[in-house]
Amino acid sequence: MQQDCEMLNEIRKTTKMGQVGIHSVMKGGMSGEFHNVLQSQLREYDAIYQEADQLLHEHGGTPKNLSAFAKWGNMMATSMKMKSDGSRSRVAEMMIEGNTKGMIKSIQSIRTMGVLDPKVSALSNRLLQTEQANIDQMKAYL
Image (tube, rainbow, N blue to C red; front, side, top):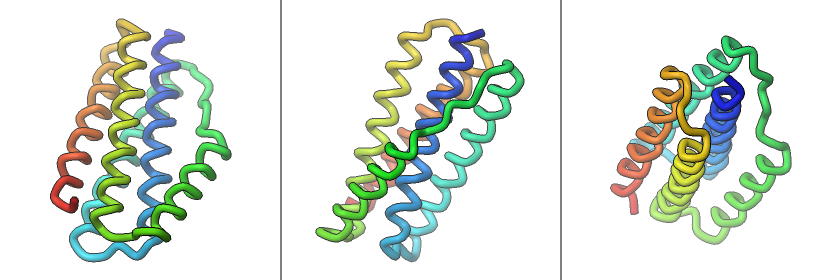
């Protein structure tokens, strides 16, 4: 049960970082189809976050939020990169890097936590699939 809650908190943190990253790059004025793709990714992160939050509640777990420092660091790094090169290609590259980091963290969590509640396992796999789909979508903008 505790491992389920730990995994759900990791899912919440990963999806929150994805949300912060997308919001940060969208401040750069992305438009058109690229903006729509980012919005779609944001909605998927929102849905996974909400499901993780609900499952955490059902398991009696305590939500552990992403630290303010992690959010701030992500926003500052994105802002600096966007100032030097805010092209779609550069933004797509940053998004791919973020998704890759999210996948690595998710895979490490899955391997270290072992067998989980089927709903938690399914959600962690959904997050992995989402990260991969996000990478595939961003490749078109490199």
